[in-house]
Amino acid sequence: ILVTDLSLDTGVQELLVKAEQEGIDTAFQRAREQEPHCKFGLTGVCCRRCLQGPCRITFNGNKGVKRGVCGATADQIVARNLLSLIVEGATPHVEHAREVLHTLLETAEGKAPYEIKGKEKLISIGKKLGLTVDGVELDKLAQEVALTALQDFQQQSGVSHWLRLRAQDQAIEAWEKLNLLPSNAHLEIANAINKTAMGCESDPVSLLLAVMKMGLVEGYDGLHLSTDLQDVIFGTPRLVKTQYRMGVIKEDYVNIAVHGHIPMVSEKVLEWSRKLNNQAIALGAKGINIVGVCCSANELLMRQGVSVATNYASQELAIITGALEAMVVDAQCIMPGLAQVAECYHTELISTLPNIKVEGASYVDWTPEEADKMGEEIVRRALAHYPERDQSKVRIPADTTEAYAGFSVEQIVELLAALNEADPLLPLIEAVAKGDILGVVAIVGCTNPKVKQDWANTEVAKELLRNNVLIVASGCSAHSLGKNGLLSPDGLQYCGEKLANVLRAIGKANGLPALPPALHMGSCVDNSRIDDLLVALGNRMGVAVRQLPVAGSSPENHSPKALSIGTFFIAQGVDVHIGVDAPITGSPLVEQALTADKGEFPVTTDELFGGKLIYEEDPIQAAQTMVARIIQKRKALGL
Ligand code: BF8
Ligand code: SF4
Image (cartoon, rainbow, N blue to C red):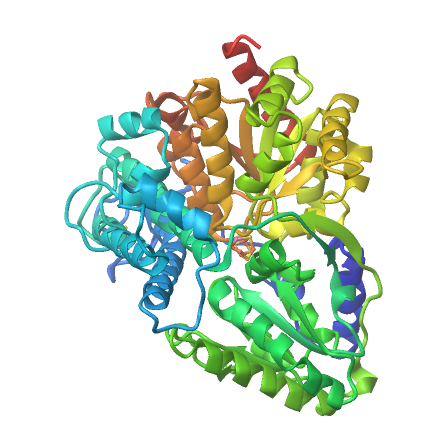
């Protein structure tokens, strides 16, 4: 198979050739070794929930058995498996949020070496939570906010504070009627696992409602809570300019890649790289160069302008450049294969979370109190490895691409205020009303070594832009767009004329040639920012989010997190496209309920929430399906 069929990224292609020459395995090759995939797994009808099985049910309704040993049907098995998968998607974000809240609490109590840089955010959250804000010291307020957040992990009744803080009133009402309001993230996760246990819940409709409830847990006590409190600690992102692609790894620097998701780790590594920069110069290097991979990249990019080496599928290839002194990992999307690759080079793979151990990595534990010790130790280890670098193994693809990021809602509003200071959202709403902007689509989620890296993400975006659809982006998909020039004003060439004019007008009012056609809004937890934008637009227009001409798209999804985030957006009434199928097609009931495709099943998420799942591998077709639906929603609004 040709490397040009595996990735659109020329730097990745070059390194795949190098990997092959050096006899190193990568995910791209291992993905091919798994083909053809098991149909029982792909369609969701394999049950391993107890030791009477594993049971495999017919996936096309014809050949094979129709019930498991316990009598479970395909509908029941698929719905249970889906709930498990969504729990596995939401839980890492909920745990992420909990780590952030403990860090904020310890910072406020003077026990952890972080600051409260997001004063305005803290005050606005405090006010919205109904806390006393006036005359209260910042640390005291931060402590109150963190303790309120902690309630979302402890209270045995009531409604999640973060849901009440961030959700639209209309949505809360609708969810309440369906009995979907979560109270405590941990309790809901335990309830969901309990439902899926052998011999517990078997009503597929109830299981699907539990899936939607887990989507709300993901949305509010995963995404929103993480983003809000991270902004309190590290500040709210503002417009930054940066570089993309493997070429950001610099031959004459000590290179440290930060990979994973937790900014408390990556920010400290960055801080200490600045403090110890002179030590690199003493070693004969030009300095210390921090580069990002996956969502740690997004966190540092959004707030610090740090450049991005690569996204999920090609994480191993960053090491194959031979020029990384260290790769620092924390949680989520860390391929276990990294350790084997690092062994072939001088690169030290360093794992940092006491709860997430990575085989073959060294451990420098992060805790809020010991964060400085961790940062210093990691940077010192990287410095020590610099003289060990084997020059004969170094090959860094040359290309880099310029990109803009840092589009928090606050930053977007500020840019729009240059057009209308009194009512910043109005110019955007007018552009939508006139059809200059047909709608907004969020391109989110991953890359997946099963499919050509960056290709579908980029193609979906280009086809939407051609139709004057504004793109907002996050996660590894945003990296795909960044590598391919869509996060830069140069990307205007792909836009329909009407959209291009809007982007030029907003840009000019702010001293830029134009806004980029895709606005990078952050990491995967920052999909909360996209939700905030939709809620702000809906509220300003006086309509529910479900009525807005918007959609979400994850063309190269791999992680259950992409599915739990998608579930959250479907619950908001937003259609969600995926380019890699979810394991649901073995159950007509589950498939129809989520995709709203015609069938005998009467209840669909489209009817209940206003959003549905769209599965489509072809990026052009996917974009056109979203455009058709956007036009439908526009018509319903009288546009
Ligand atoms: O949380 S986009 S591959 S790194 S899951 Fe993972 Fe997917 Fe990347 Fe960020 Ni999100
Ligand atoms: Fe088989 Fe039922 Fe056990 Fe699943 S729970 S493995 S279907 S017996």
